[in-house]
Image (tube, one colour):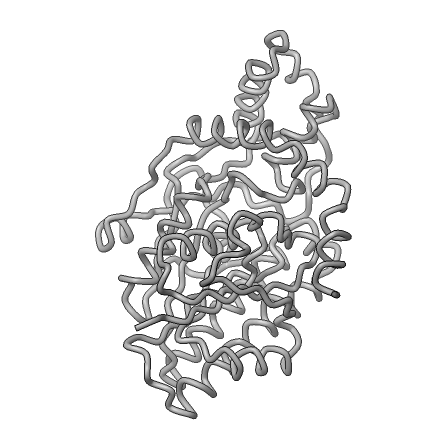
Length: 354
């Protein structure tokens, strides 16, 4: 039986890798990608699969309740993989309401539409119905020098972004507990890899090194993050979707803790090698800047549950994944140029308006 899956935010960074994973790996599945095509939604990320027979794109903003309802009524999905979100902490500090609208209201709109079809109308033709919500480790707050986030860690968000994601997580669980909606949640660490919008650290610094621009490092540079290669994340989402237990939460981490300044220096060394520049040239671009408000000191995920129950673990070390990521950006300079100039938005907006 064909499975109909609605993937939200599928033109974004993580979403595009998940869409490609499902479209190419499961030709019997029907995949509907719903994306608002805001600044970080780039259909160029999926140009290689946009003509596959089991793939359809719909420009939809999940904040629009009527549009979401129409999407569900026309497509009648058996499952939702929900990735659409505002995700940049700095932007959330400047405009918190944008994050409330998309991450909270948008998620509730999707939950309501799924509830109407799956619970109220009792559309139980599929062997399994599932609302899979992808979230972040930032909902847990910050760690000291030791310890790890587990699935039982108390929520303690510190930024408008993490607060909005925490609220959306709570709504997903509430719909499971109150209405019996079949849900699963995963909380991941920092993703990196091909197709990431260059406002995030790694693609921004790759772009800046190429053009010999400053590399702005917050505070003392000793903030620590766990890094997850995006293709490993897509594999984990695939496993959780197919084998995860309804009502459960799974933490996904890369087992790659790095202090920001050490990461940047590694990136500089690799870029100098790949660009044929003198050793140490790119490190001269490092510039320490004023810290951002509410900056969490350390995140680290205990991903033992997903490894124990589903057999998932990262396939690459950070050094391997970072080298692959740099190679991709150096081989796709046109993509990077289109994204940084905004040209991709103009072209695809014309395409979808026709």
